[in-house]
Amino acid sequence: MQTIVISAVLLVLTALPASAATCSGCHPLPEDRSHTAHLSLKILKPAYGDVGITMNYVRDSEAYAFNCGNCHPADVSKHGNGALDIELSPSDAQGLKAKNSKNAGYSKEKKTCSGVYCHSSGGAGAFLEYRETPAWGASFDEFRCQSCHGSPPSYMNQAGRENSHINTGTPLAHLLGIHWDAAQGHTKETLTSRRSSNIGCSTCHYTTVSIDWDTTYRDRFSDLFTCSRCHDDKTVPAKNQTGIIANKSVHVNGIAEVSFRPEKFRTTARLARVPEGWTRTGGYKDPKGFDETVRELNSAVYIPAEKKCLNVACHLLGREVRWGEAITCDSCHKDFAEKK
Image (cartoon, rainbow, N blue to C red):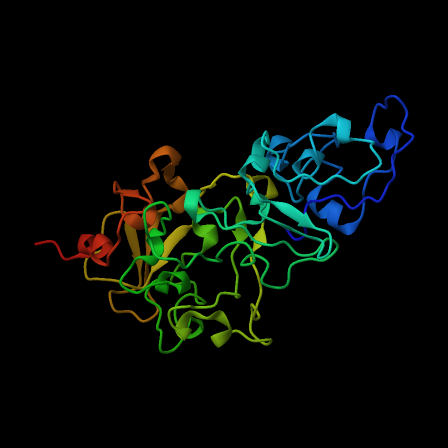
């Protein structure tokens, strides 16, 4: 989300009618920049105390829809009391609001919220990190994705905070195209010529982020993977461009949504034998050739309860992989070895 979900409607509701069919029967609905960034009136009907979120109203949405109760009290006695009540950490909170910190609150001085799940890393348990929101009326800077969580996450793989794709012999290299040339940079390698696929956010979260051209990443391991090392104002994409959230119904909903990109996977890491489930374009050592999976990635199945992926094309046919397992080069490459 690009701004925070609180109410700044400075209305003194001291002489309300006994009842009204809709909110607008007493006061205008908020249409300022910050409200409309969080609550699309085309999607939901505002209701005091309602903690509904976007996914409760629509399955596919270009806008967010967080109802009033996510930031205001559920207690109707606090409605129409002449005060602007913002309540972020009630003990009886429901829905996404229940994931807020017990110390969540709003700063009148800075006009920011802290301790709210909707502006957090989205981690589980002890790994959940809350972020301070932009000021009400303002928005995120160009690093808006990283203002809440890694884009992509760069922490090491560990129990409760799994990150299998970084735990390889060459950390982060797969983000830029399989077997890219670190000395030359991936713009001179195989990703831009469509001969090698990269593993970015959209690879496994395609319904959430369908356009994956984030160039805001800052490498904390080595400067090789910092996007601005190569991307500048003249490149395409330019520096500090962020990905695009395709469906806000599956973003900021408390669920790790997994859906695979509907395309075949390519690599220039070719051995003499073409493994089962792959096809080859060009010869074995053809500098313009590549290997490609027969199936598209979205033929895979993810089982959330077990954090298990089945039939992922780039993991070879029939292989079962579990998110969080330690991955080494041999985890894949031993299957490509020459058969004896």
